[in-house]
Length: 338
Image (cartoon, rainbow, N blue to C red; front, side):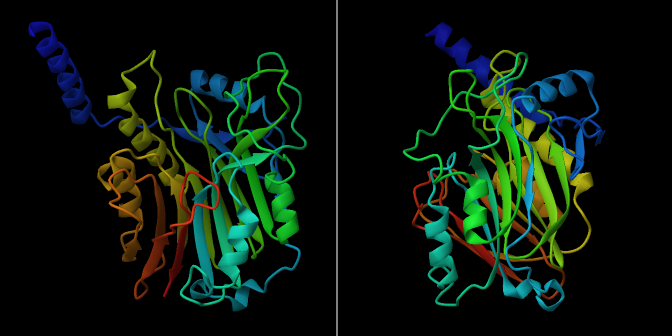
């Protein structure tokens, strides 16, 4: 019993010590374009030699960034933010039926019968199966997850092309750490009926995998796709207690680079403790001028996914979590501004 009490006391003490600390995020600085960082985007990363070495290794394992225009360019000047529907969704390493979801979205199934013309999808865990190089010596890759019947059916570039959407896809990591596995990478993507412009990529500080935030212009506002770490490193810290503060550091690293004006962020924050976590509080503060009505499925005790809106005074935002997962392990979030 005494040893059990000592063990519990140790973990409680560790938690309390973590709770008393507010870690300082590293300086984020521009990164020169290179082999895995094309000049079509502006790149930012921690200004720390050890972090840059870690990120370079992961970057060497992925293919190029993909940017493609929509099949039909919308006249952005005539489209207000009230005319756009916003979606945030972790598509479960490409397992989600994105095309089926978009079909239902356009028909008004998720907007109380209102048919959707203009929309922005901010996706996490998108997958690309073509154009990924062989695993080179010194390059890092994540353990392969997400077995699928057809690679063609989940390639985010192919999906965007078939839907006629504008696309920015920035791979964060290689999906597979063995040269014997088919070349594949995964990361975040923004797909839109509106032309996407002025993209930036922010490589986050971390301890395990590489995470990249995408921010771009879509018509009269900016949009961002964010995916934070679920866990820290076993070797460096007790990740159960440390990881919420790691996520706080990651979000505060991005904060100075968020553009002024109207902004919508779709995020899988991996917040085990929901809206009480510091990372959520940071984004709530940034978007506090726009009240948001939220409708979630179930009790929502472990909230991971969010939409954040900064739309200006006199506007209100709404989003709902769908019951249908469309093949993912996360439910899509569908939102709008009025």
